[in-house]
Length: 507
Ligand code: XMP
Image (cartoon, rainbow, N blue to C red; front, top):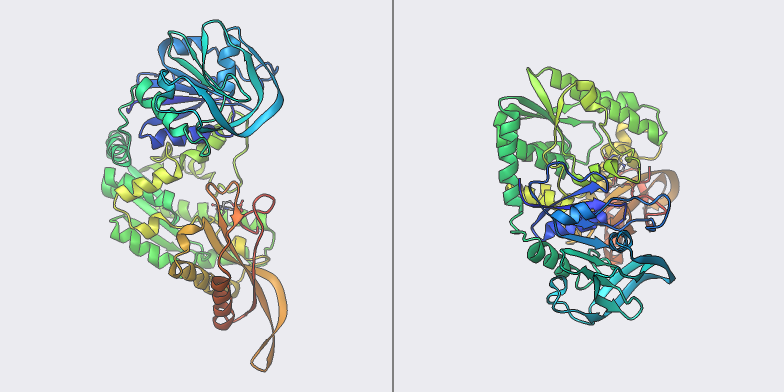
């Protein structure tokens, strides 16, 4: 296993970001709940203690005795992590007279301290805390201050223990990367050899060892995660992996055949199943969004299960689960998993063991692994697309004719984004078919046809999103083309809602 940094999660919103920053430094890391330090610590080279929504003196605060950990590894506490270190060693933490959020400037720095090597006075750091350390324990020394926060960072004399009151992991902390690199590389001694290539090598070896001659079945969706997982597993076990790609009839225009071609070019052993008639029959007359989702989720499991049972001797179910999917379910604050999980019941139903080779990777790392595996860029940089497909973009009941209208309009929008060089600037885009008809005029004819909404958002994780500020000229061109070419549509609108309070999809 590679060297790793353990990040103890005390529930901060930026814990995942700490993980990403460490990975960007080419060092492997794992985020674990604050009270679950890994039993097998042979590869651990250092520990970062995250922030928390609590105050150290709250009754409900999460607590872990840091001393035994700090006896064995270098430790960096961030915000709450730093306050907890001071508090557990006899320091005083109090509610700050004024809460400190946002930008602050380093006014004093100890350049001789290893954590601040190469970091100068005047750097911006990002604060986000209601508490502050007002008295440090005797053997703690201040190594950085801002004008308002005298103890912005400290070092425990003679020990490899540091605390920072600010958040080096957020982009706005201009010295954040340098500070984390000082900790991870110089203090913990990382070899910084974690990369997509090294991940592929280790994972393929592990998969071969774990799977041996066993057979694996995997459901492809056309999306990045399942595709990369499939290529990685097939690199390890070749045709002992069978992939199943179910067409529920609600994919984008020509998507099924295009993606099937891509998969074949990648050498995947893939079975394509056109189950659209079955899905349309099950969805007939259903308008409720949650019922549509349930019908499609169940339909998918049924078709997949049926096809998988035609295969002999399958022992494993491959899945493209990625780290953020799991962090939510591992979360110590108990956030529930999104109802978006399309095939949650599959492993139990099929009685198979799970093989999830991407479960430690963030989305951008999955893409990097895909590129390193030689997968085509258009597969790797595809926008996310919901599992229930166009069903959640047709408001009201679903008919093949409505799907045809939406596919045509969507195709014009998405091809237009690609041609205008805007595709990679938006996180996700699509068209929504509204249950609204309105009056229009085409030539000398009065029309009474459907309205569609274009939706394009910018985002980094789909948790929050803003509507993309696409150029008016571009929107005008797309609108014109849709109304002229898509029979059944006479009005195009653009959705200018952010998430929250709206969501990306309309259903
Ligand atoms: P919302 O609409 O909640 O969507 O802002 C956030 C992201 O999740 C996708 N999404 C889904 N993905 N099954 C999926 O696999 C679903 O039921 C589903 N609903 C939304 C959405 O496209 C966006 O990327």
